[in-house]
Length: 207
Ligand code: 3PG
Image (cartoon, rainbow, N blue to C red; front, side):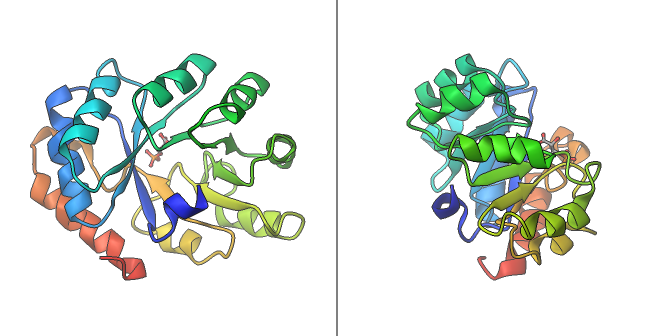
């Protein structure tokens, strides 16, 4: 996961209802410099959307999000995804993903969940829901006992606070949907989303 996420400050979290929106949205994000995309498995069109992005959007690195079951691990592998992200971690999910050829970044919000993930060999976690679970202060506290663990905080992060997270040494990148506001998607304002992505991507000079 670390190699995959190196150089990307933000993972856009994509949840779409209309299958025709996936490709233009992904193109806008990739053109803006955000190439690592999480497509959540929350809508019936998500699988087809992932297929289309993979075949039509050059440069996109696509993973599944909201992966909660072993069946969704299998689906992610069948779709050719490059990574998987889950909001939380169950024994069944951690076990299924440990045998899969695609890396999982499991979600945690407590120390005990983190330790359970480490038992399964995980070192990189989604911290979710980041703001509601204590935000920057909690990640700073995690650093003492778990100096080698890295996080991708997600949930409640936006333009006013994402830099606070990125400054932390144990944060790989942050995830969020603020780069793709619903009103811009509904209006198909892809250039505005590209601009927003470019502003966001430029924080670490990866544009
Ligand atoms: C997720 O789906 O991972 C998060 O809910 C995204 O959170 P956000 O919409 O608050 O950015």
